[in-house]
Amino acid sequence: MKPIWIVDDDESIRWVLEKALARENLATKSFANARDAIAALEFDTPQVLVSDIRMPGASGLELLQTVKSRFPGLPVIIITAFSDLDSAVAAFQGGAFEYLAKPFDIDKAVELIRRALEESLRETSVESGPSETPEILGQAPAMQEVFRAIGRLSQSNVTVLITGESGSGKELVARALHKHSPRAAQPFIALNTAAIPKDLLESELFGHERGAFTGAQTTRRGRFEQAENGTLFLDEIGDMPFDLQTRLLRVLSDGHFYRVGGHQPMKANVRVITATHQNLEQRVRDGLFREDLYHRLNVIRLRLPSLRERREDIPILVRHFLVQSARQLGVEAKRMSEPTMQFLSSLDLPGNVRQLENLCNWITVMAPGQTVEIKDLPLELTQGQGDGAATVAASEAVPAAVAHAQGGQVFEAAAPANGAPPGWIGLLELQAAGMLGAGQQEVMAVLGRQFESALIKTALKHTHGRKNDAAVRLGIGRNTITRKISELGIDGAKDD
Image 1: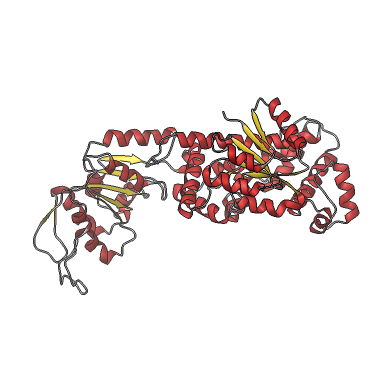
Image 2 (image 1 turned 90 degrees about the horizontal axis):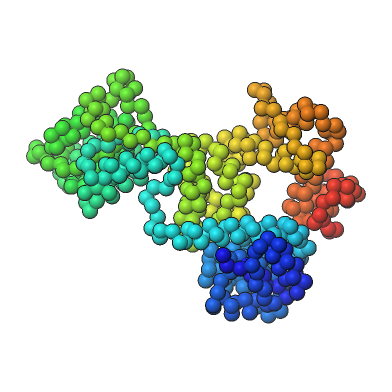
């Protein structure tokens, strides 16, 4: 592992960080100015770079710009005084990983550097891996079964029916089946039968002759002709109109079809792959789908698992989509904090992989910082379907916070009752019930202190440490917030 570079004209800052990181068995290399660090980049690179903003000569922002232009994956932590917070915001836009506000707590500084270090090592691992993006991502056992099936079917021309929920990636599987088949050099044509009006679907599939109907001014090749010698993927086959099912069955049976308005039979040498999110067996029973066509399509069935059945793949997919989205927009990829990644992994995501990809596109454009926190996610996730998941994510923080207030003793709360309210109030009730059940004394005082501390710290964060502004936001007096800050031992506050 490469050393951590520290760039600061203040020798005492360099010394403190060097000693603290040495205790963590982390190698360091220090520079007194940005110019020397830029020169050193010609011959070597750090694992993480920590730099002050204001230094004689070149500034930390200039160093950041140089680093990001040459090593975009290298995490840079900016050190700034409170008066430099506007510069720190600009640093984020320039690609900084995070900033350290002076005066900083050394333990928090080491923790932040460790997070940047983990991110750097992940980036190194990704860069050293295969440069070609795989067609389908997934390490979950359910996806491994899908990969095995694709491998077994790779040399076959057999008809395949792919089932799975909307957005789970059925077309990707169809494309993979085509890519690894003997037909790979020939066309892959995809058609969503549910997206084409019934009156036009027949022409889309089989083409039409000139004058076959009003508006048919030229002869048109249909999808079967376009896919000749290749693969035709028919998505949402369960929505195909009943009369067209008969024509499709005929093609699959004898390999011949007629264009709309045509009299000359056309020969089709096409491998057909179909997909649906519906229960075809039930549609057969309801008389909405031909049973003989069902058996013709259902030669090999490949079921694609929903995303909630392979939650362990969500972090892999999130990182992939964030990089992909950032590349399309020409910006640096966002990073998920660990709680945010756990939160996303706990969601059901009914839209599956497509919903996750759209979410990552939204995050790339809308999330304010480079490191994405839960509060940065869309409200419909954190306040809608994400309520249960938010409870899971938040529940890990509540016992730890109470444990700190009680000197390290954690009281495990009982399982939630059916009538327990959702969100943080439900968590508070559970925590109080656990503490009371364990015989803990002064429960109101313990939880009250933690509640007040959380509110004041959050308000100070939003006001950049200005306690008078924080008092106004919270609706309390200046003397009250000053007293509370002192009683609760809160750091980082300053007078306006």
